[in-house]
Image 1 (spheres, rainbow, N blue to C red):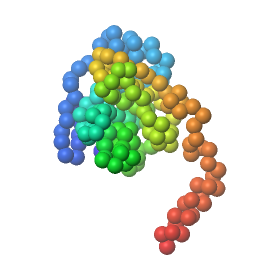
Image 2: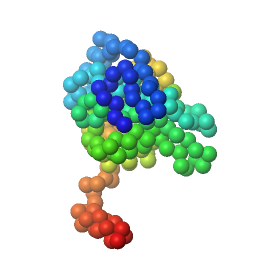
Image 3: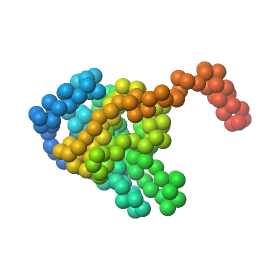
Length: 195
């Protein structure tokens, strides 16, 4: 479910969650304004609020094995809808799902395919970046110049790093690398199997 307008209250199917009501400080806004990876973002307060949403999403993490809380928040290109997720672990470790791969499928399932930015919040300094599997998954839907904000244990008050999708996954393999006939053939194969 999308969160409209990045208000204090974030919708959830089961629980209403509130985000601390804080404003972007002048000092932080100046630092963000000088960040070259954010030059195409007009409202820097949206990036700030996106980071708060990711930090808040971390509270929903189910991580009894690693105790490593991660929250992710994708900002849709309309600059209003935010899709959040938290990591979900499993006793069978390989089926654990990262926060990014919780948030992004929610958006895609709702028909959203174009994103402006991502924020990922962790409990460590320096902050962790998305894992390789998440980077490849995000590459399907995110542009190379999309900024990815990585926040450490103290969110915006602590250590944060901004990279682009292209910096995190250079020389990537994506939809544009497949010949059009392969995609059309795959669609035909699905139709045949459904008969």
